[in-house]
Length: 234
Image 1: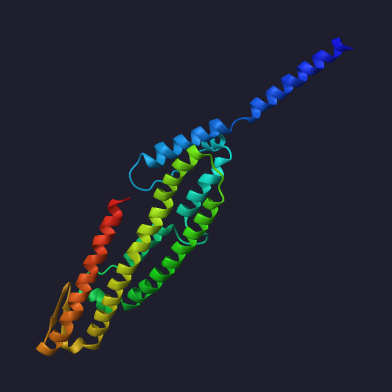
Image 2: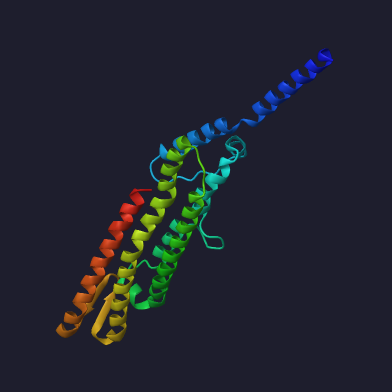
């Protein structure tokens, strides 16, 4: 009896060892994912959200879902035209003022920018809250969590913060532009607008115009300076 039982026991042990070896892929998957986060995101300046290849998805195993939190945020809300940074760029392009004539003729665009900025602020808050909630549910080993947290800060938290910081100055600049636009529209007979130049035909009109013009220029410089800082951080 014992002679027949021993091979069965041996095969059982061998089977267990084989199954254990096949199923224990997590350490290598985690190592591959950590290396990816470090070399493809953290070792590079600015925000980077590279897309995964099929081989990388296979190599990372279940950690593909962890990375999806970052890629989903970077992709932007479903149904929206572009990610948060692209939407901000589109808003800036729509509200760009290249001449004083633009102020007089593009009031509708400027008013639309005010609304779009408010909508983008809400979209940022929602996207960040969704990503934060998903991240809070992760159960990661300590070595991965340290690296993932840094990548998340770079590609999610910092991006949301930077775009969010740009919105109030843009709103201020647009509000100043709208005030100046309304003044130009209501004083057409007392102003001469040519390119970037605006000339008042009398001292009273100039006295009323100058504070509006100064405010618009100051708000514009503040917005452009912050935008330049934002671009240099990318």
